[in-house]
Length: 230
Ligand SMILES: O=C(O)CCC(=O)C(=O)O
Ligand SMILES: [Fe+2]
Image (cartoon, rainbow, N blue to C red; front, side, top):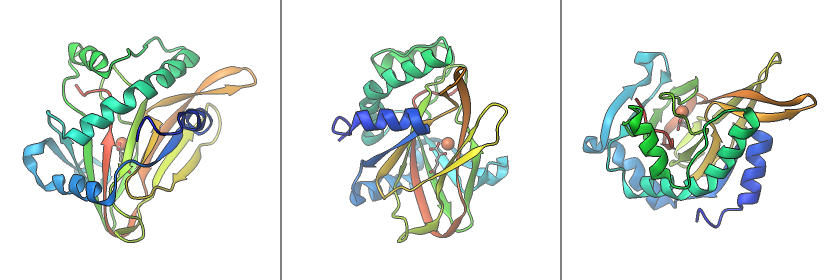
């Protein structure tokens, strides 16, 4: 399913918009099974109630190792496709880090720098909940792309609760995008910066992502971040 994506389209969308949708990655049954893990506290290393930190309203939990098979499979499966894009982005932005062919090798680099805690997470929102615009940076080592997968069915399980991205361009006003997702679909997006070609060369734009307020229902998401956390 990952290898079967139209990777030329994904790479082009990432370069033009800073994000790309994946089409369905999981069916409704797999989505429900992943969302149901939320209540199994043996699977997680920490639980964050967003309102306590000023992050918004709603909650999330970071998985502990070993990651559930589908989550580990997403990290390993997307990596070989995303690493070349990330390398091209860092080259264009004048950032030194380059990413190895195997995700394990990048994780070893994170771990050696003290970023040892796994970052994939499950999020749960209820009516009135939202996720403030943010960036998932957890230390010096950053993989510039991440994925969020919608596990709930929009319109049926919840209304509102749109995935939003903003892009802050140097000395210009910010631009917003709302990303429509189907149940089981993912969005690949820039964690922090992305390169944009201008008339005077390439510059970096700063991205943030979040979720607009749920009008009704309940929404679960799976977040896949490729760097581990300090
Ligand atoms: O719930 C969402 O769609 C966004 C989740 C998120 O912030 C993330 O996966 O990093
Ligand atoms: Fe996030």
